[in-house]
Length: 363
Image (cartoon, rainbow, N blue to C red; front, side, top):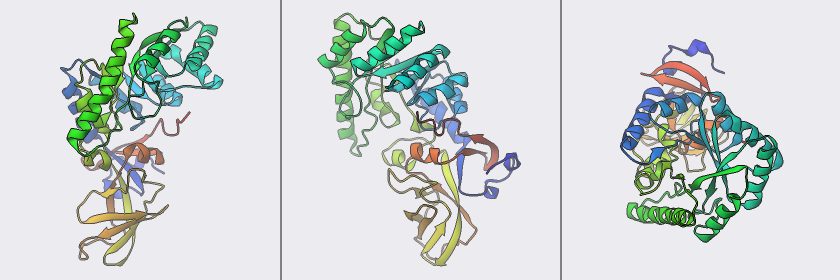
């Protein structure tokens, strides 16, 4: 549990495990990305699935972002209620109850949703018609990562032709996703990214040639922003992880500051080469591998549910029971939802304790 009594205290006084959010690094990351795109035709539509905090989203928009991206209706509701006005749900919303929620939520601002199937689009149109609303849609195109999305080219055009006949939908454009191209070889990564973006842009051209204006071509992520953001015709990129960063993105060359760590306490050191902390898999995700230690000379060797095992490379390292160390998550997007709160840090002192507002908004 955290309370206001922490505010003003040094981070060493925080009980553990705790998710630390370094606000000065967050603000520098936001400013750096905004500056990169300040003179570009492509704009930022940051994905909030990483930080899940309306305050950060407002800072991103103040820095020039045109809106935000989210993955779920629950996230969109929370951010609309916080005052965000332009939200893309980069996902398909399927099923009568969810579609009803979508239609009602659309009255809160400029809401856009993705479709890749005519029957789903028809269901959304019919539900919107019952309440006298029109829903903005993007056609999601599968550019090669084989998640959601209709095949590029003619299949995507066919879907656009069908959904533009639905009187309660407004076709706004297309979306692709190549942000998952975590390829260490930079030339190979560049070539694959260009291939994905070429498929998306050729699809846009085909749609426009058939008489349907394409206002939005949304794509990308933190991992590919420097490639997709410069690709001609892409209108916005859905950068997310850059705000908080993690070891996985750093390993793949993303050059932003690490703004989150998990503070943990050494609870056992019975051997010179090994120590155990109080942060395990319930505090740190492992879907992108093991996390790393912020300070050199210590390695996370394995995680149990409630225990983190450290390998101490220098046995003479002064590390005692009760000492606190910071762990860098391997994947911020899946570590952050394991915590209820951020402990916001500035100059190593607690600035605020903030509820992670969109934690658990998975529907």
